[in-house]
Image 1: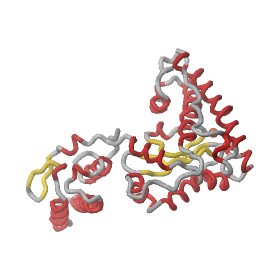
Image 2 (image 1 turned 135 degrees about the vertical axis):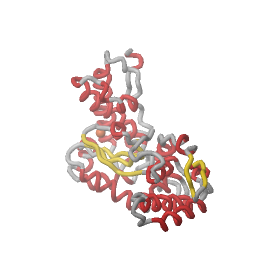
Image 3 (image 1 turned 90 degrees about the vertical axis):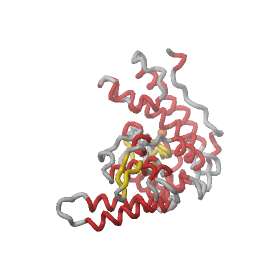
Image 4 (image 1 turned 90 degrees about the horizontal axis):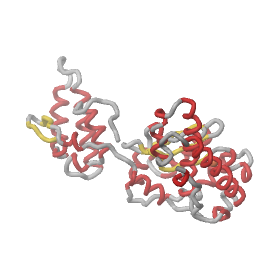
Length: 301
Ligand SMILES: [Fe+2]
């Protein structure tokens, strides 16, 4: 099995390429020693489990399948290997301006953060709030982008979240360059983020399978429609009809459902789509829950 063992990936740039933001010696030690140690210990932790060949991102979603005496070593070291592999790839000499202004990632960033400046402030705040060693992440939950932190080498994947961009806030990532000044390090790191890589990860992130939801029959303005075929005008009209019924004692849910239909119409207007089926799957799933077409609670990916 050792032929398939994990290896430390080559850096996509020379050690000194991220200077002055990240120093060559930091990169040499961080990539050459720390990442190497995670890889060696990950291979040892997986030996004999039958999962030696599984890719790290699969392992990290299946941690509970490992016996308790192995689980911590797997979580820490497969996590360390995967997190660092993502980390090297998400930096580029000279940095980059940001995601494409009219791209899908930028749209998702605007939904959650209004724009890139607030996203940067929030990831910095998260990075500073992480007590001790860990990471701050921009993640995708199948519906929207958000920021989370993880302790040690825990991966967002283990919580069902897709990591898009992570900043390593272990002291080994910055102590040589910034001593204990984590805020200065995070500011510097933001200068070398490769947003095109983040865009690629966003495009590849799993989304909920809503094909079954789109073919459900729903009653809209007294007529049966497939949910996916409902138009903007129909959603609006149905919301208006339901609002008129709000307050009728026996129909306790009707107010919430009316709001759900007007939220859905608003999403269709904002995203400029003709039918529900053209919306992003995450939005369809959320709407279907609000409208009681499917039960509330995540059923994603
Ligand atoms: Fe690290």
